[in-house]
Length: 302
Length: 265
Image (spheres, rainbow over the protein chains, first blue to last red):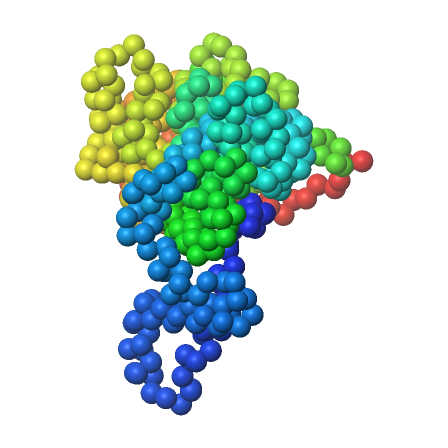
């Protein structure tokens, strides 16, 4: 029940930002010459969970300084970024106007929207996954469509969402955003659930058959519990994508939120806050992923 | 002998790219009520196929099975099955695994009565202290005990055992054979067991049915095992008939191991 069986799902989405590429040179000064005593090294190793990330981070900040001083003069350097972002970070819940709020307040608005879209994605994706897992006919019928729709970018879905909900008036932008989040985020749930249903051991199904469990009981007492670990892998990946989509959705609809704020500050030529937003989005995404993998692990042992 | 369970002309044919593969052909067997019959034969001879047809988990190509005067169609809880792997649902405790079947079969009983049934059978198989553990916390032998308790708890008309001790080490196997025999002595459920362990077959059964090698497996020889019950392993092994019977079984298995039919044109 590992993720390794699902490489296409894991790699299909641009889940990582550019960070790691910049961080790699940091490893260079660390490895000691082979002749040195191993004891010194092993003491260092104990701290490496703290030390290595710190070194990596420092390297990125240094690169950032250099970059803003040389190649890209318009890129604010770290100190300027911090000074300009301070009011948003120090008073994270302040409200100075619809598009001028504390960073966590924006984050909260975005999270609420993501949560709604995510729930829709799961509510649609889980049953669809079960359907695909249970029926070969359904798989043959729907798999090509899914494979074609899956790689479509949120930026492409959003205009379609706007058109779909054109008649909804004031709510159109929210509905379009929800539509985009849901349709982009549901695929990992659909595919992982389907894989999980197909992977239910025949033994378990035989137990259900021998006991003559009704279809409903077979589903609730055997199939769903057996599929849960796969479902939660899907849920975790879906949440990552839902969060990824939020920026695109808010940018294009102009809704207040972390992505909307980013886009607005870009248009207002305040570049410092773009970086603040990127960092916030990254950290929130990381925390969400950690939380989900805790939940996921709980179900894996079951 | 009045037959409680009768398998008549039981045939299983699988379609294969090279034409239909006949696994079992015209298999006939009659079991008396309360009889313990073992099917023995080489791996892949089709004995498990016969058993899973009786369980209703495998479709019957031709022939049929009558149990207690009724022809069987499909699986049902009137036949308790113990599989080679314990087949417990890992997200349920041992108790809940047993209850799953009990709730299904004794749905008219009061909840506390059902719980008593589960507790009783789990205690008899020696799991009184471990019944609220999940399968992952139990040893392989304990899991199989749960499987046995689950099968008996449903008070089935017939018990079907598919190499139930095949995955256990020999000490655990001996223990579980004794547990099974004790439960069977108390309940006298008509039993059909599949094994390839000669000693196990002799220790447990009233009759041993030797199956010829597939394809087209059928009944080769039937050996009556008349050791007095209740049986004790040591007494059985010291019985003067034990070694002659054992010899006969092994000889049968050896002959059929080397016999290869020429491909039928």
